[in-house]
Amino acid sequence: MSDHTFRWYDFGAGWFAGVCGLIVGHPLDTIKVRQQAHCKGSCDIFASILRRDGVLGFYKGMFMPLVSAGVMNSVYFGCYGNSLRALAHYRGEHPKRHCCDVVEGEGGKLSTTYRYYHWDVFLSGCVAGLVTTVGLCPVELSKIQLQTQTGKVSQADHSRRPVIYSGTWDFLLKTFKAGGVRNLFVGLVPMLVRDVPTFGLYALAYEHTACLSAELLHTHHHSTVCVLLGGTSAGIWSWAVVVPVDVVKSRIQADNAQSPKYKGMWDCVKKSYKEDGARVFVRGFWVTVLRAMPVNAAVFFGYEMFIDFYLKYVSRTKE
Image (spheres, rainbow, N blue to C red):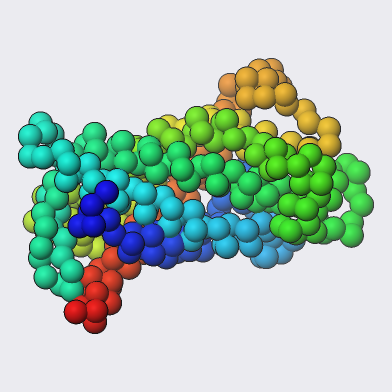
């Protein structure tokens, strides 16, 4: 990848975007995970969390994602942005479809125009999603195991799932000792099925909506309103189509590691359908979609804000 297409600031922007999105969305994610794992209504789960764990219960399992959200989003947006520029540069000016023309500059000076095409955007998103998902699996596993615990560690209520982890590091150490590195990647297959094409759709929905909004509103597609609309659209479309796979992934990762109920992805599908019917695969749909709207609006707003700040102020000081 040539020097004029590679940009380190995409990684920094991704880190900032990930932190913004996590702060906004973790409480709803906790409700979504418990709903998918235990087949209860979102209102019942909300009340249960408040009663048993208080407000801080909505932020269970947040430490590991908070540490990693910046890193993983940095990897995703870094890979995505640089792959996109590389494809746009080496493709030439002959593709049939385009999302929009994007002018980038160093120090506020307009320098290079890249034309982003639908296929380039989708492919770049998929590549970035593949790289990100592998590193994200242990994070998701620890988060879900902690989110699905109820009550406090000192409590012994055998009518509920026993609480065996006092925190993220306790989970990681016990899981590693029980089965090595392999145990930290439980649920990787459904995560790959869920995330690789979805991250491509995620990027495509954002770029397309932002550009369409800019055209309708007669403004630049990086304006605040276009970014928020694009981020909201990206969250809705990317999550709405994968909720069934997300349910399977959550159930596998919420399973008891010492005595697993599910032998694999297909076994989880069959047992879930037999026990709870087809409706189980849309459990958490509305919570997921509602969470996706503000979270991804915050993610892309943080992403664009960081890049705008860098290009206007940071890179200018280097001249």
